[in-house]
Image (cartoon, rainbow, N blue to C red; front, side):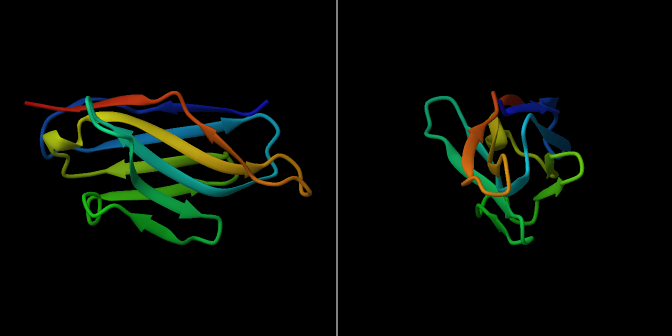
Length: 121
């Protein structure tokens, strides 16, 4: 059974930084696609950033230049470094990973439980 556990959320002042982590555990052969999404109160969940196993990254316009997605495949962990945070970044952040449990299995998608990020003075 694969599990994703997120950490690193919290309260930060505008202009501050946070680094979110998403650790995957269980039967993992490879992480093919990794991503961070967020959902603010009363809004739909939206894409923040994605990273493929080949190193290709994609960012929402709101995240470009401020957020960086990365991974440590030895630790099966995905990160989201968030700088210059704004009040509108306040949301629950979820990690999403498509991974293979064995070398012959098809990728399966998993979600983390979410971590709250609040940007406020």
